[in-house]
Length: 224
Image 1 (spheres, rainbow, N blue to C red):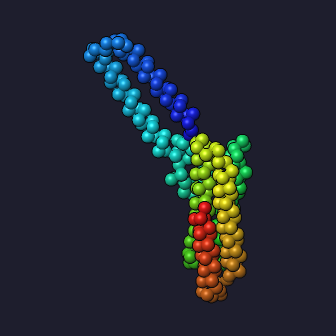
Image 2 (image 1 turned 90 degrees about the vertical axis):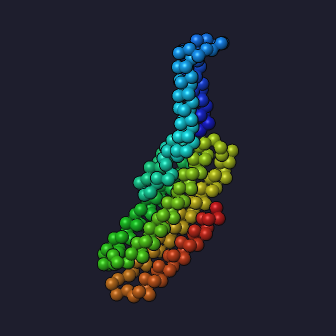
Image 3 (image 1 turned 60 degrees about the horizontal axis):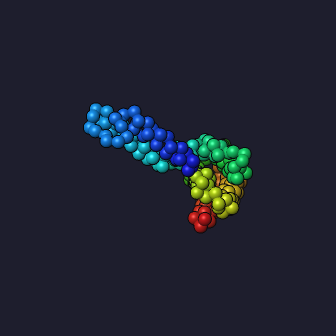
């Protein structure tokens, strides 16, 4: 959604108002309270309410603006669809979007591998490990959400003159995602080396290391 759309919307509504005047008014000058004038006033009020409704919808709905609703992005498929909706060859962020899609696919596969490792070792009760994997995934999702928001700002014609700054910001988020994936790899390596005889101390160390890494990454992200 951009300024051109709102300009077209305004032109359409102006044309409708002019047509209403011509059709329902007894004349451009000296309007009277005839039945036609009353009908004209009613139609004008209806048009005003339509314009207000359009304004509210198009300024408050991210679906109307961007093709997706940021508030409704919940899982891997939602974020994938949102990214793919912006994957246009002439987009200045084409390569960045491709990288984000690759990262999204990677974190999804790593989560699946983590679940398989826990099942193979009869460690379903280690919910803390699953929760940790979910935290890492949600952190990556949050970065992708920020990327989508930046692209939307650019697409709105507000930030076209700041393309370099937008790309730098997005690249920092992508680098943060790469760090998340690297930490997830470490987690998978540690879990794969565990067995049924592994001590609670081993599990505690794994959780502590990963948790500290995520905290450090969160600090990195918050500084953007």
